[in-house]
Image (cartoon, rainbow, N blue to C red; front, side):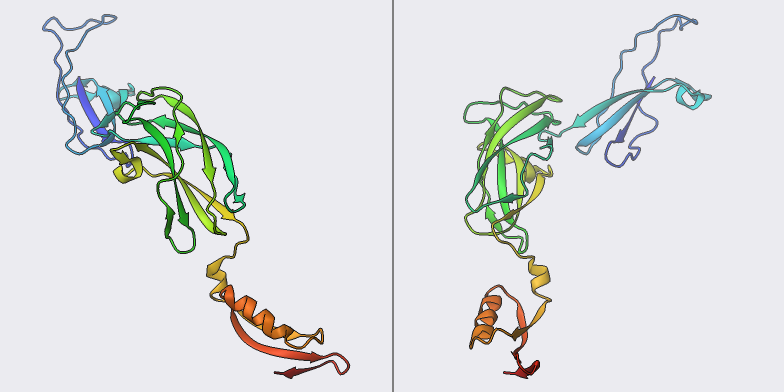
Length: 256
């Protein structure tokens, strides 16, 4: 029997002709069973792998080549911090400035570290707020959501967390990120956080504002109205092409 690892992310074969485990000298007849003292060597690089255990008739064929499915095992090599997130759409896409909201997030421990739910070195769910238009980090160390119990490898937990919107209106990205308190954020170890786009208060898509040119027509007969509109739009970042007055009785435009 041979052990054959390949990476889970790329499905790239790492080793094909792995180490052998030898059956007893007596052999195995049809219908009989055999136990193997299996020795395997871990890949040199950390990562998530699939380990295939496959019988081989030396010099003739692999059993998998003859339609016999190999035994597969998922193995994490040197991956202490790893998590999967799912908030099931419970995070709102709009909040008022400073508004608080409770959200439930399902987290799964896909790494090899043990998540303690209490103490100074507990593992918890944290948040980051990022400006969606500029990429600026608005708040890095946000509110925490605590695990309801210790969580081992391959176990899931439901975390209740209260999120608080930034005080300034804008277009934001809320990131859910596990944190090993006093040690590291999971995202700092290469674990991709869960991201949700949230608009806070009155918002504008600045990528559209920057390429938009506005022409203002004053047709209400009030002097200075076009100028006031110009000032308001300029504060929002719009480019003003020109101002024009509309003469109501002649239905003509006069450029100011």
